[in-house]
Length: 103
Image (cartoon, rainbow, N blue to C red; front, side, top):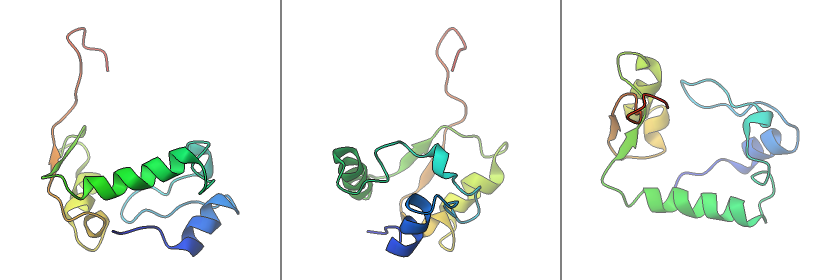
């Protein structure tokens, strides 16, 4: 399982620095869920567990369009970028909406 290096995670959570994500926009500390910085919090433990469980899937559907977000969707398939996090195929399924056309 790929996880954040402790030093990178500490810089993000303790020093509130940007979290670098290969080929994507860095994640600001303020953008994280509140319980996530505490490694003993049940929500942090569950997010980590779900990250392990995802590796058992056949693929991942993402609510993105390849033609509108080629950099982000391309990073998922690139083993040097986000593709190194998960070997699963990524399926951009486009914009999902309900019948009222609201997202």
